[in-house]
Amino acid sequence: MHYFKHRRNVLFVLVVLAGLVAACGAGGSGGDQAQSLAATQQALAATQQALEQQQQQQQSQPTQAPAPTQAPQEEEEEKEETQNTGAGSEDLPFYVEEFSVPPQNWTYYLLSGDSRDFQLYAERDRLVFDITGEYVWAYYLYDSYDYSDVRIDFRAENLGNNNNNVSLICRVNSRGWYEFNVSNNGLYWIYRYTANDDSFYELYSGGVANLRTGKDTNTFTAICDGDRLTLAVNGVEVRTVSDSRFDEGQVGVAVSSFDFTPVLVEFDYIEISQP
Image (tube, rainbow, N blue to C red; front, side, top):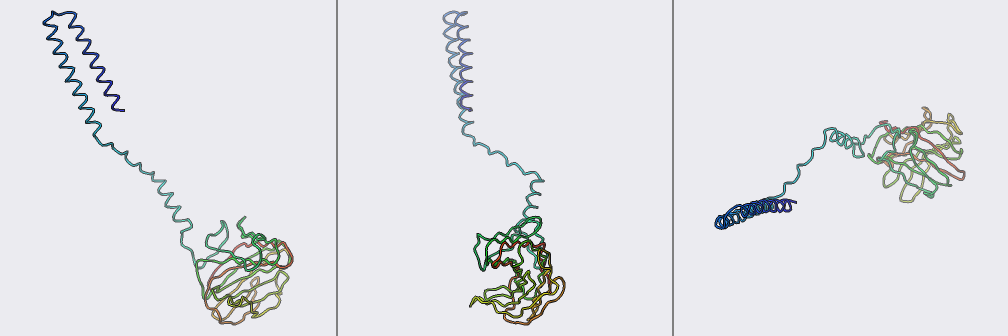
């Protein structure tokens, strides 16, 4: 761009000087003409040389990079707030999960069944287990901590058929876990699951007198404290058993279907607390 600008300057000077030469030639004598012509030619040569030197100097100067634009203060504050409240924020060992958004620190897996027959999602501030296939056993575990002594509570509403289980789970590790199952028909089981033989061992079973069966809402509690394993329903203790096989692990919940579908269970909240 600078090169073409200086070429135009040279041409302009040449045209002006040429006009002066023509004027001198028209009005002077022969000797004066020759003298004026020589002086004009010298002036032209000096002018062109000066312009070319100026062009070369400007071309040799380094191009300055544009100064960095500083982000507005409000953009920096918004970025910092996003980093502090995003997925990298610190998880709590004891808290209430109310499912206003799908939590990133919980993981589900199927112990039995086809994943095409199961959906797990959060909507209307609820965690929804939507099972359309038979014998789908879906587990949902809190990833952030392992616990030795812990209490788990949740409130769940049954919106499907009556033949299903809801479960509370504690001390999940590579060797197994403890599981508290309550069926919508009013029966319950307390199990120890061992991974090496993939088997459930019944520690106790019976009936829950105060369970609201059918399409209704109930609150469930499991406490794993030392070797004491306690199940409670709607604030009433159902049974306490003793077992010392597992002493630490994750906590979680589960919903299971059997030979009748669909199973639709919605969790209002899950609370993890100290026993």
